[in-house]
Image (cartoon, rainbow, N blue to C red):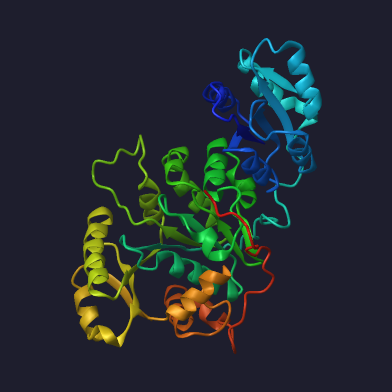
Length: 424
């Protein structure tokens, strides 16, 4: 499989080039880069083989081409036809040895397949970015746990990241998947350098038929036991994930990992056409693939009203499926007790379990600023509450629960660096 980066900088040949590359089995367009900086950052992730670039791309110089070569990414230039001597001079200055003119794009797949002897033989993961290999399959069934909640920031991502990190602390191979189509934030929560969207990369591997052997290459290693499939860099990129792809990815992942999915809030409506897709298709596929659904809502009056409506909407979409409800930011100043909230929640859904997480803004802020999951930097009421949710959903892991003070997860591969740009 040959993975291609594309930098067209708005050139008219971009769409025809994508169409030509899409017709060739064995070639996957990993990413359409927005500028040279994006191209160089993605090349450094170690997942690409070839970069198809426009000679008119602003900032494309010999240093950028050298950077591509250092990371084993072969450059292929696309130039306007009839460039003549000026084209030759430009190619020589950049040290680009392979060029396709815009009127000969039908030859692009052949050129990409043979440029400078490129072959799919080098390792697909880099020690600083990807998982080295798929965990050995134990034969025991693995769960997909999808964390969902209504709109309004009830704490979906905070809970999903902390849930996955807690499982990893219990010596369980865990994969955290960011499937929020509109507001992906797992990478920011965990301080991951989100150079390439893991969900997009995995969906392309599914389309090419190489997902079983190549899934680890799309993941980011956070600890030796925790991997992450980062989410969409922008909300409009959902069109690049074909309908059904996320379900295939989750089914493949559960063969080797315990899977935790951070899902979006939008459930859409009954007008959704599976053949054409929609942004909320990712959310619905994550829910349909789940063995356990954890629904999180905020304990304040607005949050509880949204939670009640969300549980009704969820029942209309999935039917009478048991869900585990987590009421977040519970505090005495609200003036009602846990039984009061339980009576309300149980009237709107088939509740398999009800959990309350305390208001602990200090622990949540500390984790977010440090780029860690809640619980990594020490014990707190919130981390203990999340651990109890993990105990209920994964009772077999209770015996492996870490004893003593709760410290940082060991062996982090990647930390947020000062000045690192956030994903677009």
